Length: 319
Ligand code: NAP
Ligand code: 8YV
Image (cartoon, rainbow, N blue to C red; front, side, top):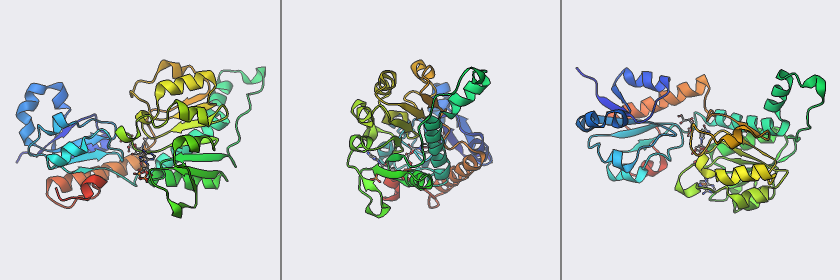
């Protein structure tokens, strides 16, 4: 008997790809690579496999009359048109919680890296500069003020880690969290004006586009560092480059970018930034857990079983 067909809308992680191939025929980006073949294939597609960065727009979802689920390998699903999916009766799932620790770990890694100039110091030793002079002094992290933009699952895990460094923690979010015990600021600019490190960990999409703009960077100031582990779209990248060039802020640690995998060359040349390739959840353990959960959601969706982790918009309704 032939396997049911699913469409991968982006290159999938091998763990997810392998799991899917054990049950399904996986069509790898056929809608892009062979649109003519896709027209014939589309009615057979029962599930859509996505990554956190991938795009599943209305124009694609409307071509899939028999799709029963969009399973995202990632917690962020800003690339999926969830409203269109709901209208077409296709629930969307994601992989919350299983990656929270890793993303919080990398956020703290970037805080330490930019504050203590760890990658620059590594380069200083490797390039043979050590005998010629001392390294520039860094910025003390323990006891510093850390502001979190987005106190959700990952934001709270970052706060927990930062508490271990004796940092004083404040935050902004759409809603105040009185139980957190941390001081709330109603806007990113007000938060930025009161911290040394500003860590961004919101979802992407229209609701947060350029939440971190020139005004927020101005408020962060010449001794402040920006860390972005959320989505490239949340930060106005052009404004950030200007702020870094002009010394409006002290530096930045960036895991995500506006046009991945392309990073503006202006950033490559800067000595006050640390750049990582959207790797906050990239450990063997976590990628396996994400693949297991994304696969479980795909199987549940295509066999009419209850979904493990639907996105909040779909959890609230029967599709
Ligand atoms: P979550 O639990 O849903 O938390 C999101 C937080 O962002 C919430 O506190 C929410 O506020 C806040 N928020 C949403 N819109 C906002 C706005 N306009 N202004 C201020 N705050 C806003 O999600 P999570 O599991 O922590 O994940 C957060 C995001 O991290 C993901 O969506 C993804 O984009 C990103 N991420 C990146 C990587 C990576 O590899 N770099 C890995 C995983 C996740 P309320 O609580 O008030 O609703
Ligand atoms: C992944 C992510 O890098 O979970 C997310 O939202 O951005 C990351 O965990 C991504 O989904 C894998 O492609």
